[in-house]
Length: 281
Image 1: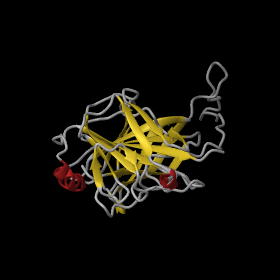
Image 2 (image 1 turned 180 degrees about the vertical axis):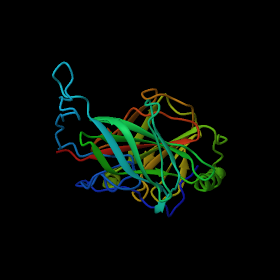
Image 3 (image 1 turned 90 degrees about the vertical axis):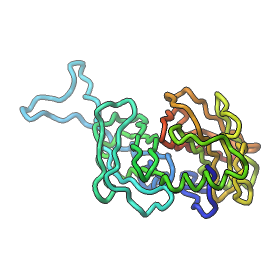
Image 4 (image 1 turned 45 degrees about the vertical axis):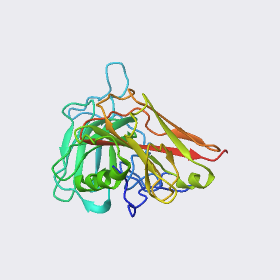
């Protein structure tokens, strides 16, 4: 599955705004928007226990306020054409059975209840036109999290990437397996050296690639060289639970962080993982 040239550098930012404009995000602080998995939700508001309809306090018997339940609202869009909404997308939350939503005809959705101040892993189901998506989102303490943007990759786009990589004889693509895309948010790091992405356990040979400095896909390359599309792609991955795959990023001059290091993989879904490599303070 080779990344085609001309695909926009979705959600990439500079060192002062490393989050760029990325999918799976909410807010207006430079960590929100289309194309990535990053989100730093607004956690500045403070929850206040409210009285019930009969005038009694909603505090628990221990005197503590009840847990805050959060509603997330946003849209589902096409990862390759961010202005294109995906109608009727089916959304759930990993490890929260029963918390589901269906996007409307314009891709808009609302999903609840979510726990506050935790990472929720959004799962968008595959359909005949799109691969499923797994996108971790940091949920803050505001009872309403708005502008959460989720993204799916078209099946036709994946088919094109397979065709482009064929001259290098990759492993036979298993379209029932999982894909992971690891992306560098602040692509200015590319000018200072390659960012290497390692998975443990290591992927099988011929099941991963990255664009070289000209944008051409290179099989078995696990380092980021192309600032316009700073990614490494792993395919034919098995189903795994969060933490089963360890993700590490290293750079010769910068400190790197995997923003959401524990994510699952699921067959016919693409897991989006963002990393950030900042210069020394």
